[in-house]
Length: 171
Ligand SMILES: NC(=O)c1ccc[n+]([C@@H]2O[C@H](COP(=O)([O-])OP(=O)(O)OC[C@H]3O[C@@H](n4cnc5c(N)ncnc54)[C@H](OP(=O)(O)O)[C@@H]3O)[C@@H](O)[C@H]2O)c1
Image (cartoon, rainbow, N blue to C red; front, top):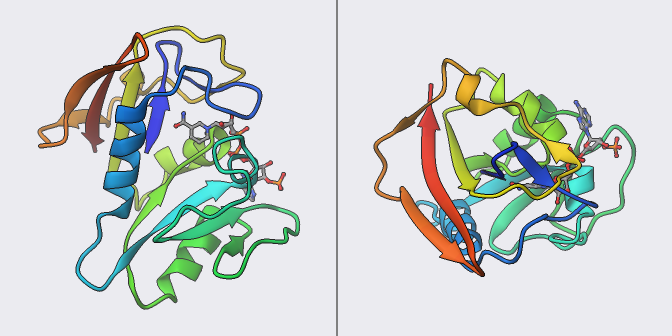
């Protein structure tokens, strides 16, 4: 799940660089929370995203939160800590009630995730502006093996004067 501006920027000063986009936040919550009956999804994030102004070290509800760090981290009960994406996936695999696993950032974790063999989809929000980001992901338009696929959730939106388009990419 990633939102990027026209320069593939995703963050600034450890937060999101654009004005609040309630429609995109609702999309994020809807997609990452929708799980099969009796199950929940997992979200995996880097330590900086965990500490970002959006998350502030508080787990996103109704999802298993997993934080990736090379160090040690004190986290609330129920949050998992792992040393790599593969270690995080292995930890998630040991939890019985998990449906789908989402990688939710930031750039360091996304860059590894885009190359991961288990990646199925990229949910991409393309924010139609340039926001002077200090954190960027690779140019997904030039990732020859990732293309937008038909998906009922694809849409365009505008919040606080900022337009965006939501697509699902697949290999
Ligand atoms: N627009 C979006 O969709 C979106 C989504 C999420 C975040 N963001 C933004 O992105 C920015 C944060 O991204 P970021 O790239 O700076 O940081 P990040 O990817 O969230 O976290 C980086 C940290 O993760 C750990 N890490 C990274 N690779 C690792 C590996 N291979 N093995 C073990 N640990 C690893 C390290 O933690 P330690 O230093 O503790 O070892 C590293 O410092 C913020 O501005 C945030 O708001 C944007």
